Image (spheres, rainbow, N blue to C red):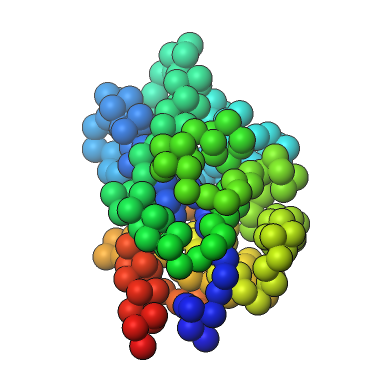
Length: 241
């Protein structure tokens, strides 16, 4: 299997292209450190991952933007932070402006030269996903959200939906490479669904899974890259072979 075997790349957005951990810390850290000055970034991100998991279980139909107020409520309780009236809305709005990783914009433009179809399949909602895509220069053929899929990754229905949409563009499943950072939401489920996978190991050199839920088991990907720029490097090297 070679990187040049594919006609379409499908991407996770949050954590793969968008640096959500930095965005979360920028908003939550100042508030948490007021009452919990020894809280580490890893502790804050772990609390976010736990809050997200709990909120999703409590209300699976709650959309991405709607989860933020409840996630902050749980995080604030965990760290003993007194919530302010506008905190929930403030946290929600901050999510729409999470920054891209430093390599994302240029790397996506490079990848676009070699793959005719770039599709995002995100657990974010339409408003948030469109804002993020616009901040990236709108490089995608399609932006598919949780509202479109009717469910979230890692649920099989999410993969059935977005792979079907790529199929409508005339691309077979075997010609799709799914590119993602999350072992929990993407890599394991994509492999189980029969997709080729590229794991973007954004947290290389760091312990744990940060703000992403820990998978029940690690899934070996078909390809490994440390960033999107590293993936683009590998694609270009493969073309020279």
